[in-house]
Length: 52
Length: 225
Image 1 (cartoon, helix red, strand yellow):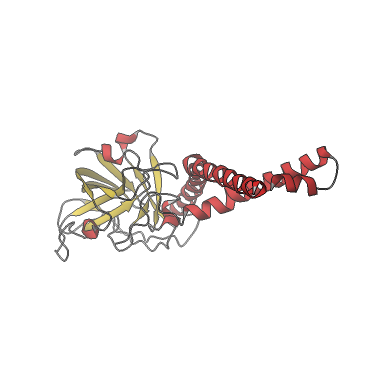
Image 2 (cartoon, rainbow over the protein chains, first blue to last red):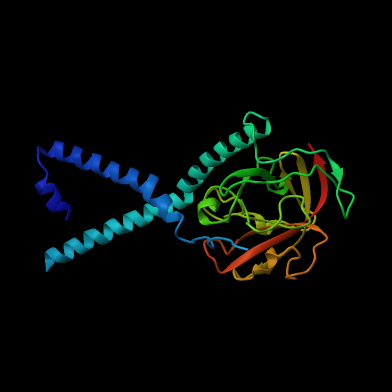
């Protein structure tokens, strides 16, 4: 999978590495600021909602 | 075959890394996020109380001696929407810096921000049971030390018009389905309340929902502000 991505990315090896670094950073940002907060409000890891 | 195994291995490693990152988020990231939200809530509440935002959530009226006991309370009404702040909670036994804004609601969306008031239970100072729930872990671990409270420890609730002091009277461990602890007279559904109680709720053991720690207290003092 990663080998396939590396072979199909355009540009020189340093340019590919930069592209992968930017893409990885974007994925991390989306995970940390969007996906994980959303998941935390849907996974009752600490007991879930309290209702009367 | 080898190619397929390699792809499966890479996907599994990626999933593992994402799960590890999610655990890091729960341990550290959720606390940072909650702290940011709590600072905003504190600022919002302070602005409301200082009159910077007219039309706050409480109506000031003169202080009076309330029915049923000798504690003087400035009556106030709370019309806060879900997720909005209305008070601060302090527990001196947890340290002088331990203070959180209380918000309305106890769904995960609210608990992930700050401890919340259980809808349907009484408000601070009212006769009946004022119930507050908070996370034991994640989101800054606000109620991590709740099981360490002992009878006689104080819980202070600061609203716009009053400083309430509750004294802890007991602690118990109950299954999550035991909602009788939220009744106006805990454990006695339908009974007529005569005391002003507080119930603090969190989960036990940490990271599970198998049981809940219930700390109860009674109002011993109120100071109109």
